[in-house]
Image (cartoon, rainbow, N blue to C red):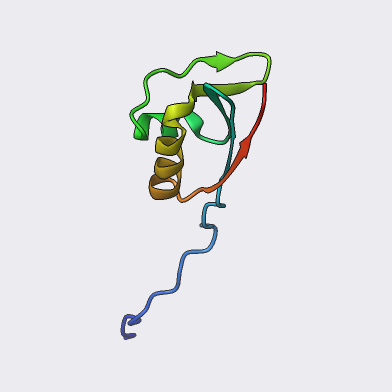
Length: 88
């Protein structure tokens, strides 16, 4: 009869999720979001105004709410966030 292990081995096949990257381009009035799971992030930040920019292939939010997106990305999704100021 064997005794159970004190510290069971981790299961193989389960991998840690890779850290996601969120890139935000901030203009005069608009911020464009590029990355994975952006819709879930906007839900976590409670942002309801989020049109899709077909030309840039990115979600848009008002520039005044970009700091809320950065905070939600770092806190809820543990993302690496890069922010770039653009003149468009």
